[in-house]
Length: 187
Ligand SMILES: [Zn+2]
Image 1 (tube, protein in one colour):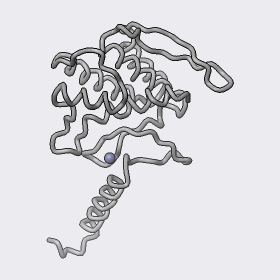
Image 2 (spheres, protein in one colour; image 1 turned 90 degrees about the vertical axis):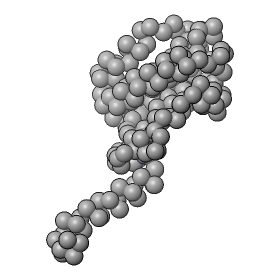
Image 3 (cartoon, rainbow, N blue to C red; image 1 turned 60 degrees about the vertical axis):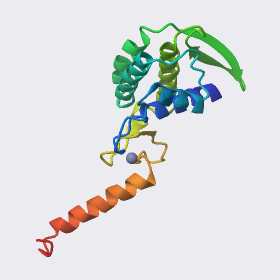
Image 4 (cartoon, rainbow, N blue to C red; image 1 turned 120 degrees about the vertical axis):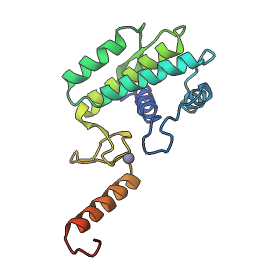
């Protein structure tokens, strides 16, 4: 993956994870300022004043991106991604990347923030799906957390976003087993 694609991949993963059911208040993009900070942290120039309307559009985009992330086949991914892409203006650019050319897909620089963000995130998703396969784009299995991550484990077995969630899941499963072991002490 080119540096630029890696940047876009990080952007889409982090954007989806700005809605985190593990938190008491799952919404991390509550106000335009929150989006401003998120973009600044990712070196993404908003290029415009962020309004409540833009924020609402970004949340909607995020929901669409999560649905794409959860697609398990290229067929499902294409079906979910095309409607997102179809309404955005797109510019193509090539840059030398080592011994080959990297194709950069982006919105024209004068496009609205929501358009530039949508194209960058879609390009990130495409790059990740090409590199790892759509089934490796996963959501955390330790409810209520459903943070997304890329499973890069050798045996394709990673199920949790973090050690925190893996531990939480295992403790809960252990308690569940104890309850079911029928010692009756808890009754
Ligand atoms: Zn998790």
